[in-house]
View 1 (cartoon, rainbow, N blue to C red):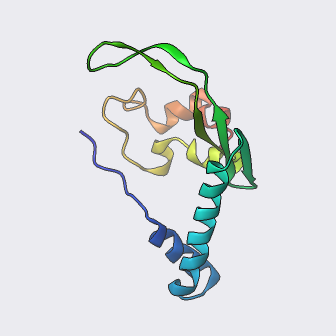
View 2 (cartoon, helix red, strand yellow):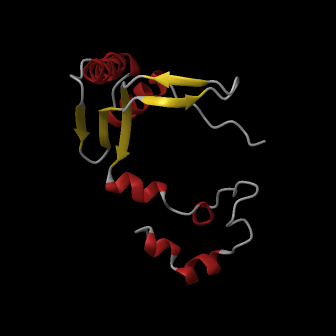
Length: 137
C-alpha cells in the first residue's frame, strides 16, 4: 500500500501567504480564513448553480445532478433512489493543469507500483512525445 500523501491545513496556507507577503502569520491568518469562508458561503448560497472563476488558479462550480432511480448500495446490493442534488466541481487553470500533468519521471518522483510507465525510461517517454501531448516542454 502506498504512503499517505501530505495534508496541508488552513494554517499552512496562512504561513505560505505570510511568507509571500513578508508579513507575520498572525496578520495573514484572518485573511486566509475570510477567503475560505467567503468561497464556502458563496457555494452554499448557490441558487442552484454557481461558477467562481479565479484567474490563473481555476474554476469552482456548483452543478445540479440528475436523480438516480436505480443506484445500488454496494454493501447490501439493494437498489436505492438518489434524488437530484447539487455537487461541487473544480477545474484547474491551464497553467496549473500543465504543471500537474508533467510526468513523474521527469520530476524525479517515484512511480507508483503497478503503473504502466513503471518500466519506461525517460528516453521512451520523449520518443513517444508524451510531454508534447501534455503541453509540457
